[in-house]
Image (cartoon, rainbow, N blue to C red; front, side):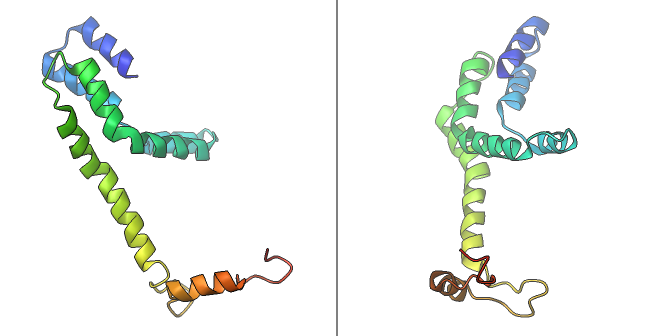
Length: 139
């Protein structure tokens, strides 16, 4: 898609700022609408989510690279500044969410349980083999 945008920008001779914006929009990964359409079309939703996750993790390098290659002639692209900005906007919140989840997982009262299950208690039960499942189901 970035190459299609590059060609369209040249064919229609957009102003430099508009051309760079069009290339940026198609160079940045997005998936919200894609997942809804995949679900409605009964497509492989797991594949769609996986591809979006991979493209999101690669975004801090791929987006500035595509911008430098395709839009560098229209506006100045500061590659490493853009890498850092995208990392702050995309990757750091993901890492913060993963760390937060790991710290508070099990400490929050789950609906219907009536009490909070400690992370350490759950890990100990897992290593003892107590999975909370009937013997014939537990592996």
